[in-house]
Amino acid sequence: LLGLWEDVRAAAPRHPDARSAALLEARSVCGLLAAGRHDKDLLDAMANWRSLSRDLPPESLLSALEGLSQAGVSWPGGSALLTDLCEQVTDPRAGASALLSRAADRRAGGDLDGAAADAEAALTSAAEVSPQQLTGSADWLAPARLLDRARLARAHLALIRSERPDSR
Image 1 (cartoon, rainbow, N blue to C red):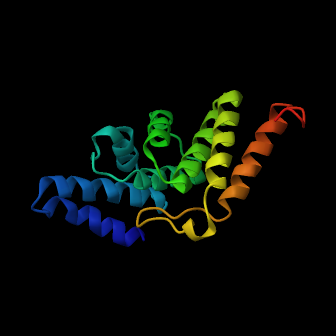
Image 2: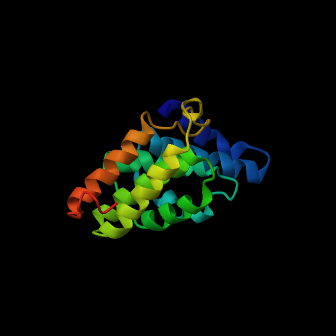
């Protein structure tokens, strides 16, 4: 996939329509990040994510954020992007994944109450997903066992917060 996204990024400026060129550039940045490239220029582009493209599908951003999260890469503006992303997505699969990513970000920042609330919301959203819906889009694939991941995140946060078993 890296080669494909590198080709898209190289060709994007040659597109005759400026709006389409910007969209291709933004999708290629997200695709490269999701595929494991974490160069400074890509992180700088994500730091200015509001200027990437207003037509960028939220799933593209989600894919990039999941790639950064899995690699343990943090960058300024990531928390704000996660918050915006959680408000943008309408697909319950993407919503649950975005909420789980934000829960992890909040947990890392010490906001255990916010992390637990996000994990709870992700659990609710993931429970709405039927097995037939677990495919994804061209830019993002729903993680396997999404409901189990949400359950595990919520249980982990309950343990960290020393919640009583009957407090839920």
